[in-house]
Image 1 (cartoon, one colour):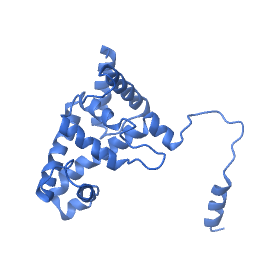
Image 2 (image 1 turned 180 degrees about the vertical axis):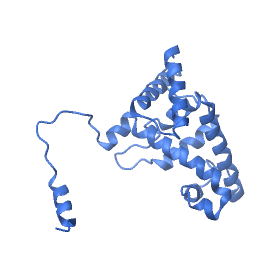
Image 3 (image 1 turned 30 degrees about the vertical axis):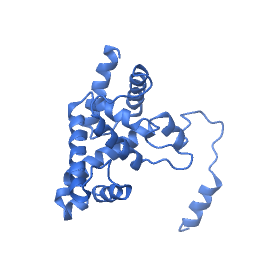
Length: 200
């Protein structure tokens, strides 16, 4: 990676941390390109830079549950969401701590409930845990879930950003880019929908 690219990645990673996980499309594209370069130099297989093997496997399972493969739509794994997150974490210690600490919390909570780490637990146990930490309101009745809720909020947001800014994710939503149109026509279904619900 060139020095400019490295500096740019650090700037992007710091911006993501400062913005609470948000990333703009141009910056996201840069991160995806950098991850593809890293993957190419590693023989076509991405080797985690910030997370250890267990943490990365946990992130992959979370990503798979957050944006699963459905029909023709690929999962977050195919969109490179985990490479995206790990590469950003490798360029910002604050982000890395969110993921390493969050995964540590998740594994400890899973051990207490199911005597297994998150990746080693049964799928129904994994989703039961996510049902607890996916909603901020659960922290009101169960304050010990607070750190897990905070972590999952970051993971969910960044997995979704990582996937929907990737080529497979962009294709999945049908985005064709900003193109000029000779004529704009409103689909009849939209007109029917609006008329059906109109008070007039």
